Image (cartoon, rainbow, N blue to C red; front, side, top):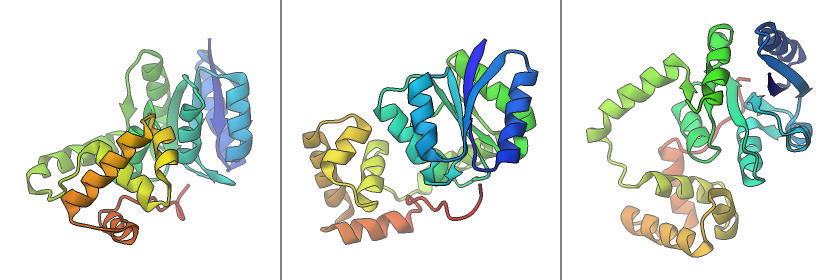
Amino acid sequence: MINAVVVDDHVMFQQGVKALLEESQQITVVDTATNAIDAERIIMGKQPDVCVLDISLAQGNGLELAERLRGRGYLGAIVMLTMHTELNIFKRASAIAKIDGYVLKLDASEDLMKAIMGAMNGKRFVSPAIAQEMAWQDGQAEIDDNPLSTRELEVLTLVAEGHGSETIASRLKLSKRTVDNHRANIRKKLGLTNAAELTRYAIEKGLLLNLSSGT
């Protein structure tokens, strides 16, 4: 039996997800939460096999919650269940939070179980709509003028959010020296000299999260 925790700030939807999972008779929902603070305490305490996280939450968001869980050593599967279809959010979830599944709420009845069972077998599931958009974007890669590597984009995103090198190193599990080297390479590649210019570049590239709408 797979133990799960479901985190969503809409109680009716949360209970619907719980019912959907337990109907499979393969999953037991051991607890639920409506906000990021309670969710972190519950997940770290109970160490479920999988946690299903909404992105937009009270007292934080599911993406930052997932990053903190990974930083604290949580090894269970993390499946994001969200209305957010923006690729920058999906990429952030994949690169920094190390998620195992990304399911759109509109497709939950069909895809959530697929994502969880896939994660239990070491396979990552991404909602078809997101996967198709990623494929299209990859097809446009030749005309993309972004000179940064994936790791440099991760560092740039965190710099633009106002994090210092020590915090970034902790989140990405790198040394501070490595982060400082990445920051120097980013400035050199982009021809930018200060944090304000880096932030402006990140905004133009759609790297900063906008979780003010959707659930």
